[in-house]
Amino acid sequence: MPLPATTSSQLPLFHVVGFTGHRVLADPKGVTTAIRTILGELQREAPGEWIAQSSVAEGADLIFVHAALDLKFGWEAVLPLPLSDFARDFLPERWKEVDQLLKRAEHLEVAAEPGSRDEAYLTGGFEIVNNCDVLLAVWDGQPARGKGGTADVVAYARAMGRPVVILNPDTKTVRRENFAELRLHDTNLKFLNAVPGGAPVADGTSRARVAAFQQKVDDAATHSSPHFRRLIALTLTLHVTATALATASLAFGWHWTALPWGKLLCLLGALGVAMVVRFQRTQHNWTRCRLAAEITRSALAIWGLPRATRLFADFDWSGLEPLRRSLDVLHRRAAREAPSDFDTFKQGYLAGRIDDQRAYFARQEAKAIPLLGRLRFGFLVCSVAAIIFTTGYALNQTWGWPELPHTLVEVCFHFAPILLPVLAAAFISLISINDLHRRVARYREMCIRLETVRRQIEHSQTWAGLERAIAKAERVLLQEVFEWHSITSFTESH
Image 1 (cartoon, one colour):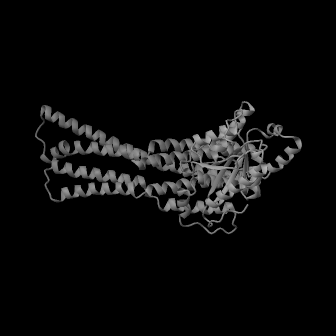
Image 2 (image 1 turned 135 degrees about the vertical axis):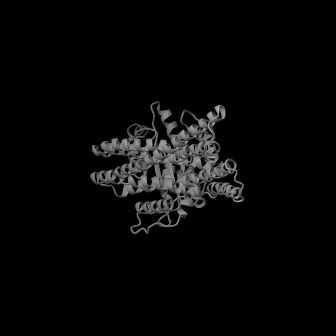
Image 3 (image 1 turned 180 degrees about the vertical axis):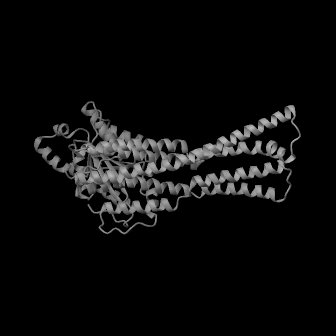
C-alpha cells in the first residue's frame, strides 16, 4: 500500500476505526451499503489514512472487512481465539475463504485469555475499543444475548469516551455519539513533522522516511537543548551571590551604593532565568523532540523483525499514541514487503543498538561519578567549615577568648557562619538538580541489564526467541527514556 502523501521527513497520521456487529442480519446488502457510506464519510472528514480493525466473525464483521478493503483501508485483524479454535465457528468451506481473507490483514492479534468462548469474544471486543479512535457498531439497540455481544462492546466504548457510530441494521438509521472527542489532527505529531531539517529520501521507502524523521528530531533536540540543569544551576548561583553580598554588607559594615544594586541584579537575573525556562516552553519542546527521537531510534532498531509486533504497547504514551501508531503501521507494512536475513539482522542489532547503548551509558556514568564526587566534597567542606566557625563563635561568646583581630572576627564569626550553610545547601541542591544519585545507579544498572540481554540475543537461533530478547532490550531502553521524560517534565512544571 502506498504511503500517505507527506514530505520525506514527516510521518503520516493514521486513524483507526474499530468494528463490532451482529452475526445474523436480515438485510446484508443494505448493511453493506450503509457501512461503505459511513467509511467513505470518515475518509472525507479526516486527514491522513484510516486503518480498519475488527474480527472476522460471520455476519457484520465480514461485511465490514470487505467494505474496508474495497475502500483501500488498511486492515488489522483482532481475533478472540487462536486460529485453530476460531475456525470451529465456521463451516470448512467458509473457513477457507476467511483464512484467505486473513492473509490480507496487515496485522493479526489474538486477544484470548483463559476462560469461556464468550469471555474471549468480550475480550476481543474490548481490545478493539482500546485501540480505535472511532467505533462503528452494527447494533439494533437491544441488550446482548450473551457475554461478549455487541451491546457489551458498545457500552464499554461509551464508558471509555470513544466516539461511536451506531448503524441500526433493521432501519438503516445512523447515529453518532461523542464525536466532539474525535481528534482529527494531532498537535504533537504536527509539531514534530513541522520541525525543519531531515535528509532527502532517495529510495522513498517507509524506513528511509522514518530515518529522515529521526535524524531531524534528534538534531533539533541536540541543537536546541536549553541545558536546563545549567540554567537552574545559574539561578541557584545568582541567589547564593545575592546572599553573599547581603551578608558581606552586614558582617563588614559595607554601605557601598553598588552592593544593593548588585544584589538586586542577581535576584532579577535569577528570576529572569527561571521565567525563561518556565514560560518560553523551550524545555517542553526539547523534551518532545528528544522523546520522539529515542522512540523512533528504537523503531528503526527493530525494523527488520518480520512480525513487527507492538513492542511499545505496554507504555503509557501520554499524547504520543499517533506517533507510536504511525511507526507501528509503517513497520508492519515494510516487514511484509522485505523480510530480513536472520543472522544479518541479529549482528546489526547487537552492534548498532546494544553495544552502542552500553557505550553511551558507560560514558554517562564516567561523567556523572566525578561530578557527584566534587559536589559531595564541596558540601562536606562547607558543612564542616560552617560547624567549626559556628562552634568558635559560640565558645567565644560563652567564655570569651583573647582579643581577636577585627577582620578575623567579621570573617569567621559574622560572614562565614551565614554564607557557608547556604553554600552547603547549594551543593546538595546541585546534586538533586542534576539527579546524580539516581543517574549513577541507573547508568550502572543499564549496563548490567544490557549485557544480560546481549548474551540472550547472541544465543538466539529463531526469530521467535530473538524477538523475545529484543522486546526485553527495547523495554529496558524505552523505560529509561520514559523515566527521564517524566522526571524532566515534573522538574519543568515546578
